[in-house]
Length: 250
Image 1 (tube, rainbow, N blue to C red):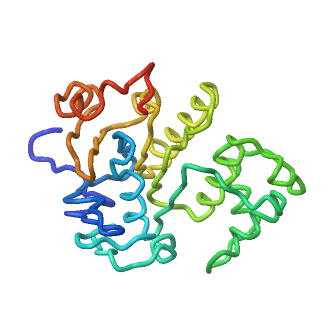
Image 2 (image 1 turned 90 degrees about the horizontal axis):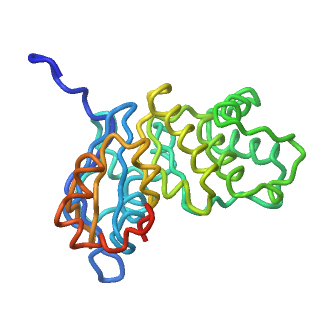
């Protein structure tokens, strides 16, 4: 960055997030920021609190204390649906779709999930962005894991989100399918200027797409920086480096 210039303001972030569930401390002192078009990867051993953090950021769970901020506004008290209307989208590790509906019925339900209601042209836009090509009368129950993920992502993109919170989008996919997810995330972040926070175990995916990586352990951040930096960090090695096997964190 040239002297005299300032870094772009953060689009989304949180400060000093703490979360207790069932009398157990799940998160403590978590803070992060992400800018438009940036991909922040989050890694850590099982039970580190990664998904719980996404639950707080998306509004599904209220933190014990701390702030969630979007476009300079404190949104900590806003429920999930209000955050979604602002432009905060969320995907889940398991791509659950309504198996009793067809593809067309699923898109219609997503278009009419909240006001303003969207048109079928909005659905066509979302499908085109992720390369989802199925006739409207195809039952969603017949879709494989990758196409279920693409359908759900298309439903989110209809509403032009500004940030996506993605929980293990490569889970259950083979290498060629992971490559396709890689290309979609690159398109969303670099071409469409959408910020992405991605929890992921597939190191090869984060190596390809993440601008920065944050490592969590026992509900706290233990390292942050480039992927190479965090993987060389002694604290990360102490937490779980021995579980890195053939590029996958378990």
